[in-house]
Image (cartoon, rainbow, N blue to C red; front, side, top):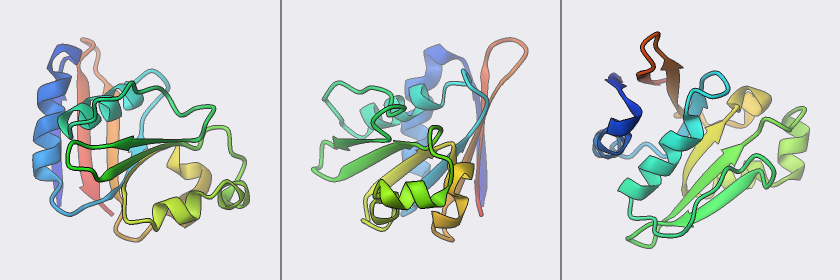
Length: 140
């Protein structure tokens, strides 16, 4: 199954809410896109749509940020950019996080692709020539 949106950054909150309504029971999302495409910004917008009230930041150095939604469930936002391979990810507890049952957003998933569950959904985010974003979502 797939879905796509084209939007400006001013529309990101509306797209995040639409994505969240569309996602169904999917829980692990691999975010693909160039540096600066807006992957972290998109995750933060999705978190806001899910009722996260706390201050959000990039997980580049912490590897995993954990947020509580308005309903009390947990969102994990992971950034694997600094990891060399799946072994480092396992040492950092990424495997357990992916199996925790929480909703997980994984930036730079290729660093540990073999750890991702088979039912991972890919979010491809690209910047268009006019500055708008193209979000293409597809199941594996």
